[in-house]
Length: 127
View 1: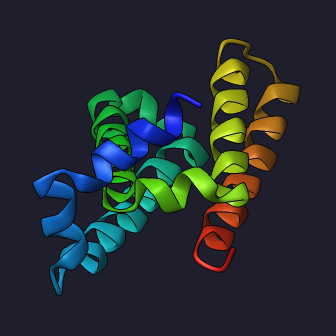
View 2: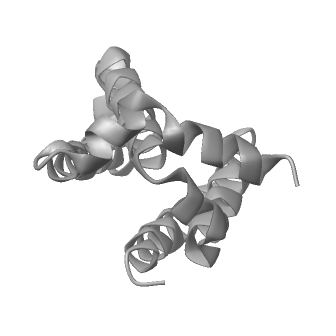
């Protein structure tokens, strides 16, 4: 399959190796990712905040994407083989599709998807 060789190539890059083998690379990126989840999640749960400060929400989302990409960059082959990682990516796609629609039902569905994404993310470390 095309994705496995791509993941192997990423894992063999000097930047991936440097981050993966450093003492503080993974813990720092992981901690910033969790903070970005809280930052962006806060703007999702407090609708007035995102209306008053739209750049605040966008910055949290950008930080979330950047740190998520870095976490993938650290261990792409492990992520490729991880069922929970694939589930998380599928749920993120569903969340994006859900974002195109705006109603009370989609807001509730969005919260369920976010909760499922958080659980799937936690399972990545164990499976």
